[in-house]
Image (cartoon, rainbow, N blue to C red; front, side):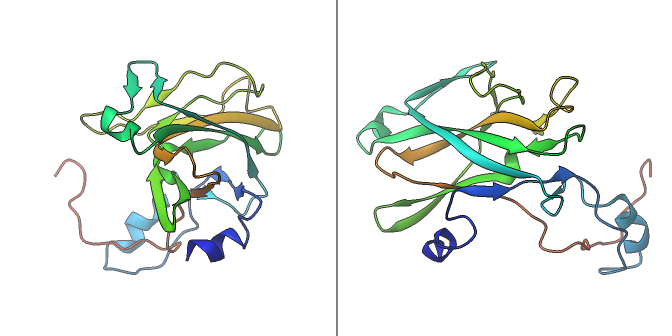
Length: 201
């Protein structure tokens, strides 16, 4: 399955990334509440149809990663397996002036470990910058509770036509030699809906 993926659109390690935008208004799909619930659109939807693209420009493997609030260290038992943290730098091109938001939970790294396909989720994301070699502090997924980890362009990066961001993925073999970054997409533009109580009730 992943070999066919590698020989297709992602063969050059390019991944299309779009702007966060709401889906178009949707028709009813799962019940009477669909008409109202669906008007808000899919939250944090990254639309890959807007001509915004990203390219992997560097990959760095390490046994530990320093973040803004803590350091992550690869467990000693994983050292024998030569598993590493993998920091991927993406160069994203976009129309100047467009705001971009990227969610860590939407990013996965796909690679081969011997003859077995492997997938690992993004556990840390940096802010955007306009310089490839700038220092970008890393924010990790929380160990407790829910927190939406994301990178959004701001005053200095929204006007730019090219920005850079770092993403961290765990348990990548040192001898993998190649990987692909995939971006999560909704399986459809229309949501599945159900009858839900209104806020405050």
